[in-house]
Image (cartoon, rainbow, N blue to C red; front, side, top):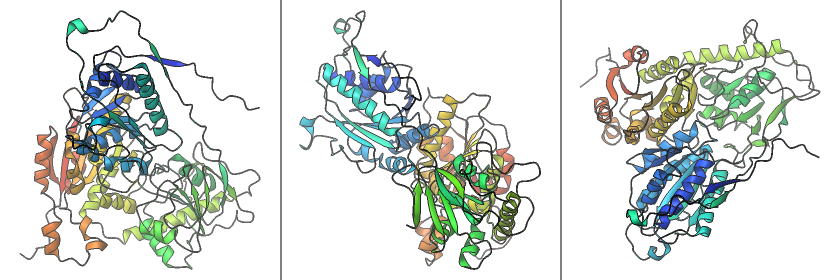
Length: 605
């Protein structure tokens, strides 16, 4: 018999909404009441008419003050703001609300990112009732199921009775809301979509004489709570001295623990969440390209254990994980585990390293002790070795890691370092304990992977789908979430590092409402005119005149002017002035547009 791991929760009920004279508003109150009782605390609204019942529902007595409302004028920015609000703590997702019609289509990019990043997100779209669908009614399209391939649950909820929602309609709405939140935060977290049909009237009755008796005790509605499944049990994975741990986006402390417990080189992306590991090898990408190009290279791994979602570098995704002589093991509890090269021989939900017999002493290479005097081989909380594992020579493993680090530093030193990379590193080095660094541009995050060292800051990037869309609004949501949830004395600044093209995608996401908290957010925009994004392999043969004509973005001063119009402390500055600007004490929203320093080499006119 298994012992229960937690007490059995008592049954939970919520009061049925008092009649408002609008069945649509009644149902909205019930939905918000259920979500608030289950822990939802943030909602982002994009203005619209058909979604009016959801606005009135938030203001109802049963809900008022329990869910914070944020308003964004653009639906796309609203969705990514909600994504950011929920990303700080996946157990507490946010909801995004839109009206009907084309407004719903603007949510698609954020739903895609939530799906691929496995971030809970509640999408509530208002819709016309059945009698107005497929007949050419205004602002009516096929919304039901429009995100079906991306969401964990999709429900098309029928419109309640016009004047008052019936008890069964209210129970259905409450049960559906509870099921949606459970699906969003369950074993395979992600977005859910509730398409909510409303028929007129869309607002409560205003006649005082028709207000219901508020002294009568309301009926109660049972609220479903789903107990989450326990964490998966760790399974043994093979480990030896020629094994490396690859930590992709969101790998988290488990990657650091596994690498440190066995003294294995850790190749970690900036947003992996594993950069404090003692076995981390900074600046590894250039070295890995050299290692994997030479079958006889002394550092060549023969096994890679992958955690998180590696997306950044071709040396990792193609050369290492795609090599025929490298065994690939994936650690991922979800059914959509990453395996880009399609070479994974084993997938486990959680890992415990098992040293292979006869391999504990095989590490070669020379170098100083990688962990430093007095440091332990494993991080606190590190994954232990499997029972009966061969004893390993940690001194040899440390020397092996140091050999990787020395070679990686040398390889990185041979790379050019343009001013954009120096700007990115200045932001990286200015971020420390208590700070949150959000990375957006695909170019800048790769710069950091090539050159940055460890950091004690929390780092987040849009790497689920590896896109640049919505990063600015997502960072705004993250900053708002930190204001609401952190103790003021413990919270540092939130910093967003983006390219100019990324920033321009959704600057309106930084338009904070008058009643919203003011987040401490630095937006650092690297103004390279879009040139680096469009100078890669896809456009290598394009003449410069063509790139300038079609692939340039507004000058940095224009971006700063737009940001100032949104109420930010905004200014443009040269890259060399960025470190001093980042060190300035500041509060609220600040936008720094970093521009190329004056060249000492004359250019032809």
